[in-house]
Image (cartoon, rainbow, N blue to C red; front, side, top):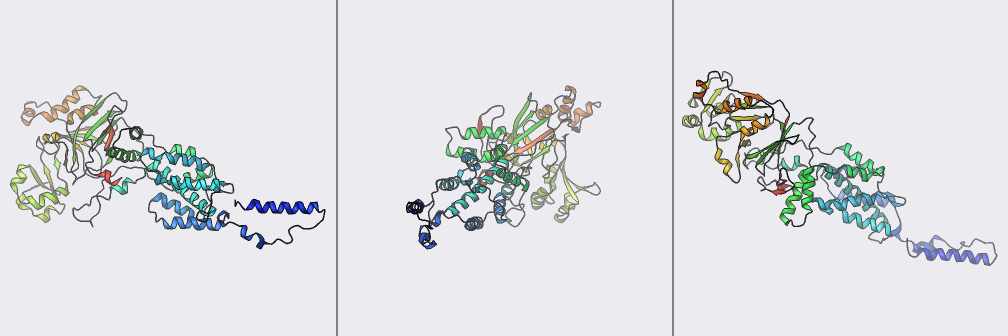
Length: 504
């Protein structure tokens, strides 16, 4: 309150006392009017609900927010809903609870400015210490505290629960389907079913404020994954270089992107593109398998996804994807019989199954969709001798390769998107753990025997398809720093696709 207010109160008390001493009955304030005390008023201390609303409206209209959580905050105040923090006593005790959570966000790689910590601290201090002036009136201070507490609270809760960056938007607007054509659609590079916030989550968050249950609510949204905890621990360990700190912050954000928990899982396969490794382990924790991989080049990035392995196919044909036919075969190798023979490619009429000579087909026919190009089985097949199939929208798989030399490269981004395996038979043996040794040996012989050996062993029937009788979940992920399997050590990897730049 104004420092002049006690003086006028003392004046009124003295007047009253004087009247009592005179022992006269008369109204002591008859000569005092509003004009006498008008100059005593201090507008900085005069609370106005009209001005409070004006300031909040000014804040929400001037920010031009585009993120979902900010828009929901602005929508709440645009609807004239009750204030969440300001009350007749000043402000709710929940302000301190929330502020203590917000102050800790920089230990997880997010700057505290992102959740308005300094703005909240300043206005909360002014309100509690009655530190107002013409530039920081009580109405303006209350409005700033109310608006930025809600906005910071929702940003923090949503960010810790779902991530501060939406990967579906951020990573699926990088590469166009057609090279050098910005008008063509974007490629789908991130196809992991990461959870995203919705109106139900917003309402639960707001209800926690109304019920003064913010501490329990904010505790419930914290990431619980082992990777998140290990990365945060390393982030707060002294000795990180500035570049390592930035890389850790980006990957802590990735660890916030939560996937729905699998209904069932016997084996998990994790392929981390930057580490260029496949790691498979039994959920019971009693066995594992690890190997090098080759993956999609920068031009043909391997999409990030999750799926379930369905079966192992032995000695597969390779059906050339239409995109390769359109971009590589038609422009450079049409009617080139030597090219088709050298690669053992066959052109097949889909409707009749007949083989068509490369000399009898033109570009328009090849692109019509009525024909497929298939590579024959064998050691020089691009898929090698084994392919692990799983449902996905990209026609990519885990498979053997006829180019074993690629595994000696430092950066092994050489494919059109598929994952090539350094030791496919080792993976098959691991995934079919529990099967008889005779069954495993039959798989081995099915891919190792030559045509001559098969003819010499008429009783041996090679396997073609081997279904899995367990749930094998596959995750293709992208972490540029990641815990070493079986330890707490954080290993840093090159940002092969440059995705870190889109998350900083």
